[in-house]
Amino acid sequence: MSAPHGKAAGPFRQPKAVWAVAFACVISFMGIGLVDPILPALADSLHATPSQVSLLFSSYLIVTAVAMLIVGWVSSRIGAKRTLVTGLAVIVVFAALAGTTDSINGIVGFRAGWGLGNALFIATSLAVIVASASGGFGGAIILYETALGLGIAVGPLLGGELGAISWRGPFFGVAVLMAIALVATLAFVPSLPKPERPTSPVAPLKALRHRGLLTMGIMALLYNWGFFTMLGYAPYPMELSAHQLGLVFTGWGLLVAAFSVFFAPRLQGRYGTAPVLYANLLGLGIVMAVIAAGVDTPSVVIVAVIVSGAFIGINNTLTTQAVMLVSPVERPVASSAYGFLRFIGGGLAPYVAGKLADATDLSVPFYLGAATFVLAIPVLASGHRLLARAEQRDGESESVEPAGAGSPVFTPVGAAAAADGRPPVVVAVGAHERAAAIVDAAARLARDTGSPLEVVHVRQTAVVEGQAVDTETEEEARDAVTAHLARLAGLGVAATGQILTSVGDHAAAGHALARHAADVHARTVAVGRSPRGALAQFADGSLTTALTHAATCTVVLVEPDDDPRPLTPASLTDLRTGGA
Image 1 (cartoon, one colour):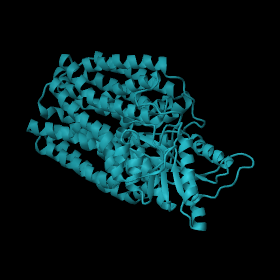
Image 2 (cartoon, helix red, strand yellow):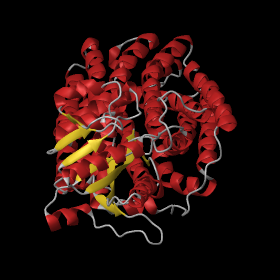
Image 3 (spheres, rainbow, N blue to C red):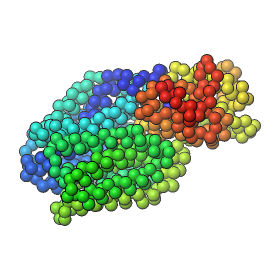
Image 4 (cartoon, rainbow, N blue to C red):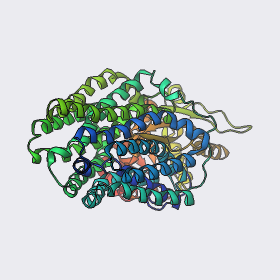
């Protein structure tokens, strides 16, 4: 909910290590749409059919899917940096080889090697960025999301520009840019510690025995089937040049990025994960059916593809959050299991679409894609109760007590409130330089109202494009609370401590805090002015805004030298440049 270490930095005030990995992320995410503008040119230049060209996606994604099962095992043994560097090196080699070959089969084969490098990279890049960040994970997450958005949007544009020169251009362009990223990563990213406990290579497959994770994974498989059918076959009926295709998919990519980062979390906060996904999958099914029905009208296909970017952006974000909410296993294992299923769906779809197009006509693969989007709805519905319960559990608390001989034993706030009928004052704290003063101000408020005091810290799991990472260790989260409890105990102030868990952005943390306040029948929730800037709050959500809208009790802003100020949704405009 705030910077885990020291004073929060702005999202773009990061060390060179973060910038090096972020640059590599941009190039990696370019790979999603980089080849789309050159698909018709490849078919013409290499005398290949669209179904043969579609194997570029299939080989890349199927190898990525299988590799996702073992990347956690690899990373836990050689370390995150070595895994990252290996992935970058593999991408450089196979992207360059794809540009040198003269056959479609050669490109398909080299794209498979590219997929291996991609799996090694994407499975570790988010964790490396968060671990290398200074001044808080929030800025690092925003930078990662920015890199994702730039890569998705710029990939088709660069592919179109280079593809207009030669179909080999995009492959060589990726090789050169990734080589630069590789050198920067070697030079600036420090070695990171290995996990204390190595990951089992069969852990992701075992994790799929859990119904919730399997259900969400199958839903993602069906969604990605439709998604990559569109990505692999929509360029043909558009009848555009490589440059024009690049512009179309750039518009699509801009919508993907915008709706993934800015709109998806807000829709989720207002309506819930499952309802938004139901409506979104139905919307994708309709858009895909429009493409199928208008496959002979290029303008219809162009508009529908661009519009689909909004739905895809929402789905990419919320599907990953749903997986992490229902998953009972460690985040890296859940990410690997989920990645396996979603990439398998994406890899099989272009191959099947090609066979259907050859046997029938070009509209049939799109109708099948529309059907898979719609079929994902009842699959998701079969796990609705699991997801609803998981969303309610998001924000569960763990009691914390200060360590050390002679430390007082604190009763959890919920029990204390039930015992004497006094609702507590809950103060939300991060680990920034003003946290102690904020807790002291909340302690005065609790004293003046005759209420127990509870110190709460939200431990967040950040979720971005199929990956999830805990933003701090359990020990760091406990330290953020016990330091306040020990200091208060030394001053003779009784308090309890809680750690909440939350999956998603800062707004999700605000909703988790509101649920907890309702559970303990809090009199007041006290928050301080966050050190995060307005840009960070806009991109990653505002805890205070979400909390104030969702809380059933009074929310007050406490300042070290001022009286607490009650907050209402109307008064939140005063905090846009510095609120929590």
